[in-house]
Amino acid sequence: MEIKVTYPKGSFGAEKARSFEFDLEFPPSDEGGFMPISAPALLEAVFRHMNRVDGSETHLDEWKCRSMCVGDVVEFDGGAWRCTDVGWEEIIDSSQIDSPAEEYNG
Image 1: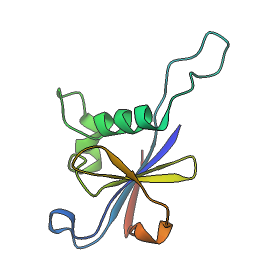
Image 2: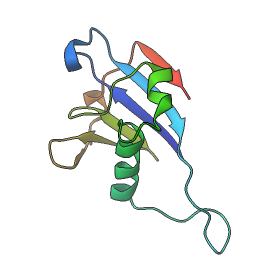
Image 3: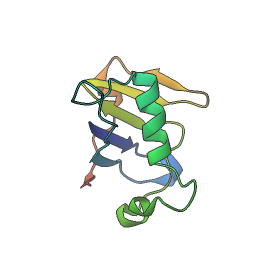
């Protein structure tokens, strides 16, 4: 599934927003195709993918990015969610998402 993560301008003193686009693969289902996954489960998978947990996250070094934190935005399937101090907040108005000045496509 195609995922876009945006680190907003001002986060950790950033002078501009940054965006990262990548695909997350999920296990195939018994019927073929891929297992359906709920938005909360997908958001948690993205959070894990974008954080340094066990040293396997070499893509974060390659992308020269920090771990995901409060205020960062995840987009997929036409929806957007902001990481909060506990969980996720759905973003209804897309104008609330910073336009990134630079993007990385992984």
